[in-house]
Image 1 (cartoon, protein in one colour):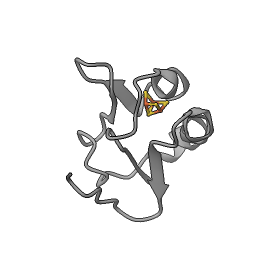
Image 2 (image 1 turned 135 degrees about the vertical axis):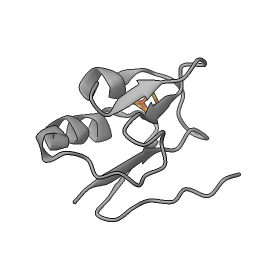
Image 3 (image 1 turned 90 degrees about the horizontal axis):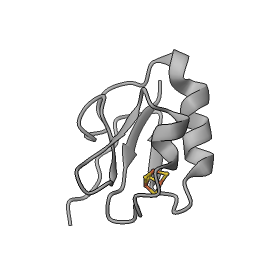
Image 4 (image 1 turned 180 degrees about the horizontal axis):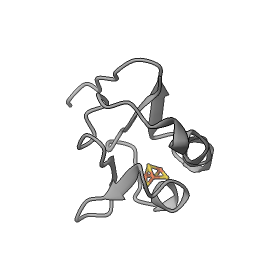
Length: 78
Ligand code: F3S
């Protein structure tokens, strides 16, 4: 299983992730990315069909803001 979340503290709204994986990532009003599967909560499994897209997004993010794990991810609220 794979779960993903965007760390919006470090995202610079570059827009690469949504281009690589439009079925996973979307942008809020300020242009910062979030995982639209679960409103960026890191709790909903990514469909296997999108693993390749997820990998592309992960590698393409210039700030390493995309977190991927095999378990639900909880980012600390700052
Ligand atoms: Fe942000 Fe990285 Fe996507 S900087 S917009 S999470 S590619």
